[in-house]
Image (cartoon, rainbow over all chains, first blue to last red; front, side):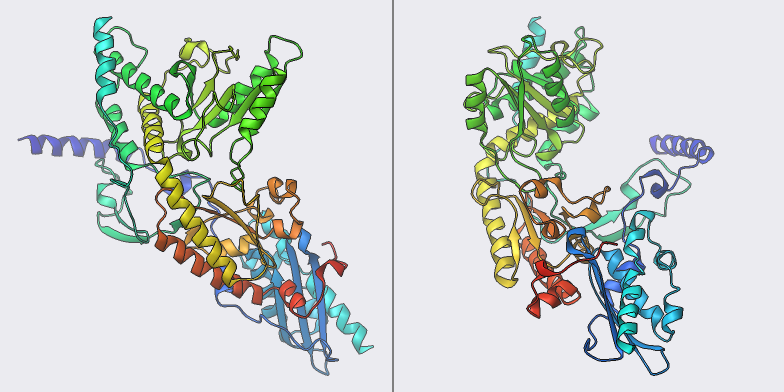
Length: 156
Length: 406
């Protein structure tokens, strides 16, 4: 008897609730600082971490940033005789977004010429990794400019 | 009148389940079983079908940010959330009397933890409100040349203990008011407001395994310290903080204080051992690790380490199954590294490399071992990815490099 009454109460309550839809929990809470899985992926499955022989004529090395800023990136590119980038390596001292940005940059420049690689913008990298606006400075193309400049001075 | 005193005596007689080592729950690695069916009896159109889900959640190593509710505190609070829901300021019926009795009993529990008289404890919504009340007092001081000294008892970032007794002695000899924010210290180290000559003290509930949304301010009566109320209204809490005192929350705060008083020595010994274990293991396995803060005047449960050549936020991302905090710029909204680390003269690059490990009452040895193991593994990995580490290995002095700004 009591159970039937409870059932009726429950149905009445549910009818009320259906009229006022509940938002899923995520929309109600403040935006969480979750790491996007693309960013985490670049850390857990790193591409192109390492070093190329910096004394080689075909390798350009660029270093940007400062430890005092919490952001230092080293980018190296190796070109063939036609000026196409055949290999790229990076090392980064920086947050997860900085690591992922550097890693993505080395993936993108492979197979491009130096001029084409210089057109990659940090906004492109940020969009690909879904970086929030506050992390835009991490996606640097400065490293690319620096290393290609270094390369050009060698080839001259 | 007689009836109300009887209620008070009855409330005082109900003890919080006591005893060091007796009922402190032990836990292994945190595997939580989340059963959505029990979340709420109220049906919803958007709820998932009731089914038990296993959910692995990160280990909790961030007790300076907040602490979990001690189960004994929850036990003390539940009756006041469910049954004894009266307003403690209602003077005309039993609901009010029993709620008031519980509030006064909680006040006594808080007072006895810091060596104060219960009449000197005012309940607030937290240490932040208490701090504001204390500092506002400066503006309403009677003597025009009175000033106020305000110092944290234990720092929340690096765990350093300030010499409160010495500061208290100096302030009292110069007739200057002395306030301390003891949020991270209450219930963890012995405090006595009379020995330390403290005039005002801020207390936070959720830093000592109590509920969030409640705290207290200690205001000395002899010699009287006058404060101006931040919020005015019905004149509750001796006119110093109007607003209905939330009985369930203050009961929780009182219970948390009583448990802390009983378990302080045991907790301190256990946490010191675990802290020693964590620091020794990490420092033995990794070179170039710096502990921030004075090693002697230090609360053991707050360990702040800088891992050179590795940036703090990247390490937090790598240690995704442990809940930690960092003093690096990337983790703060302002992109500025921790002001505390800067103030103690830490090099800026080390300030970006700092991680805070919090060890608390419920932290287990397995959790510490797991955290240490993961930390060592990921620091090594991140150092392999770090150009700074590479340069240091090649014998380059980093201080000699001209860095570019970007």
